[in-house]
Image (cartoon, rainbow, N blue to C red):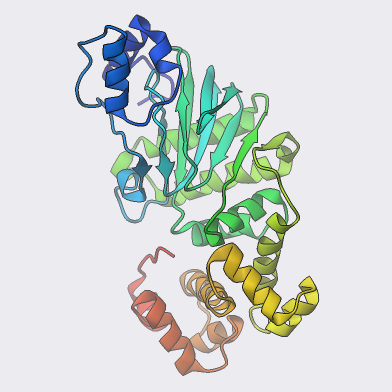
Length: 346
């Protein structure tokens, strides 16, 4: 499968319907039945009763990550596919390889040109529409359930994109879309093409390579394209506070205390606790434990450190507490996890 190729069977059907009544395609619809009603009203009665390709108001990780170990997938967005509004349970990058695409955030319309891309967070109601044969729009999907582990290097950077991903991971009401008005960057094209080619290998695709290519893509964006970032959300200072708190905890897991955090962020203990619950839906105690256990998984998977050292590095002072907490969270002890070499989606 090539990144840029002729129209597939589904695209040809969509194009033939679009050519007969383009105005039906120019506004987003809720579902296929709604499109059928629009077509019938426009005098097109031979439209199929069921959608030729997958549709759904909510798209889940199971819809696209067919193998449990896969954390990144990449594929062409169907040209001429009607713009169906939907939400995601994963992170999506929409990359315009060539041509153009219309992105709808609810009913607000944005045009992206060749070289532009946007990052859509889980829960954002959106859709896209491309109306030319030469449009090549690439979807890059990343699991939210394993993002903190797979892309920990990205999260440790100090910039708005890293803060954006932290907020996705720990905020229950994040409503942000990042758009990048870049000109064509051959470096970004190169890594998108590698992701596409590797993902096209399907079951034989290497998860390690896909993660590495996505990391390099995001790394280049952080280094060279943050000035082209266009936020589609009015930002307040509070947007940055939760990621900063998470960074402070993660960087000081061995010694962090609630008292130290209150001094650093100028809040009382009760104010800090309420803020964390309001912004993330988690208590401070849960957030601290979650970050400690994520770090424990990284050390178990990527190092040969002893259990005692891992316990210390993650801020536990008692081995029994460390083992009990890990097993409650993941269903197996740290020793069992290391011995089995299993992937944990966290």
